[in-house]
Amino acid sequence: MAITPLMPVYPRCGVRPVRGEGCYLIGERGERYLDFAAGIAVNALGHSNAHLIGAIQKQAATLMHVSNLYGSPQGEHFAQRLVDATFADTVFFTNSGAEAVECAIKTARRYHYAQGRPERHTLITFANAFHGRTLGTISATNQPKMRDGFEPLLPGFQVVPFNDLAAAEAAIDEETAGFLVEPVQGEGGMTPSTPEFLKGLRALADRHGLLLVLDEVQCGYGRTGAFFAHEHYGITPDIMAVAKGIGGGFPLGACLATEKAAQGMVIGTHGSTYGGNPLAMAAGEAVLDVILEPGFLQNVTRTGERLRQALEQMIPNHEAIFEDVRGLGLMQGIKLKVDNRAFVAHLRNNHGLLTVAAGDNVVRVLPPLIIDESHIAECVEKLSAGARDFTVPEPA
Ligand SMILES: *Cc1c(COP(=O)(O)O)cnc(C)c1O
Image (cartoon, rainbow, N blue to C red; front, top):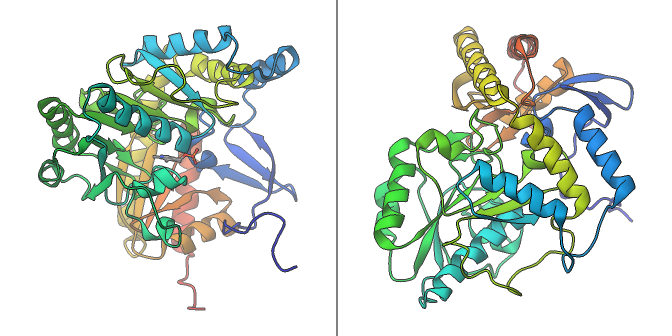
């Protein structure tokens, strides 16, 4: 057999982490990495956070899983806290981001069905979006590498250019259910929505009786310095998908909605065996405890600004390598003039710095939300050193 026991869908690199300590990962041979990838925006509290570990250990020893056929004091408590802290009136818990987006799509379609307008089943989505890897969520993007060979995909999505309000407006017809959009595109290249665009989508949704569905799986949960990225734009969605940072490393996602938008999601319309089980709720509550501590998000804003300044100062010193910086808070992307994947590998192999490649030849800088000045300095040192000794790889 030539195939590996792990289905070979990932280009796995030589880093083989066995332990994590705060902002560092330790590999099999004891080597240390500064982790500015954070599990792709997942390890919001870094690695080995004592409060998160304690909560999971305690709950694991008390009650790990029961069916959603039973009452959930744990789920009710966590959902209430999310409702209190956001635009939402109700929450469905999932195990991943793609499932949270699936729930958001279903909630949007079902709203119009409940309104007696079942023909409004199409979500307008945006070029280079990433919403996950299920059949539904790959149908919502136009990225060929995610779609090729998986046809037939689901109907009910229409892709238009990102940050192009006129294109979004022109796409509205009698079948439109609403818009599905990342306030800051992550995978696609760390591009924030312009204020005119996101506010404009909100206004279009209101004017046409459509729903604004936000995918804050990557940009939400404190990543940009606000609890959710849409707060920077002064708007609220009708439905929102959340995951990644919400569990701090425990598999957890959520679909949040207003009472109005969730009116179709009645008994029997949706479900999940694991979704919202007591163990996941304990992990989620522990992460939320930290994120909502007074000063935590202000600190993310402050370190985000420092990181941004440090990156901007570094760029002119290495003009052959770096083009520009984009992003919000601790969700920053550096656009490169050399191949981003080769540079990410170079940083990892030769400088002990973990980052993630994204679309548009961008390197994603996604540290844990708990970094301080010393980690920023170390990151910029490694980036600069990496830029100095990077040699363009020979074509294979
Ligand atoms: C990661 C991501 C998803 C998918 O989350 P999974 O947990 O991998 O299913 C969806 N949307 C966005 C914006 C993401 O960054």
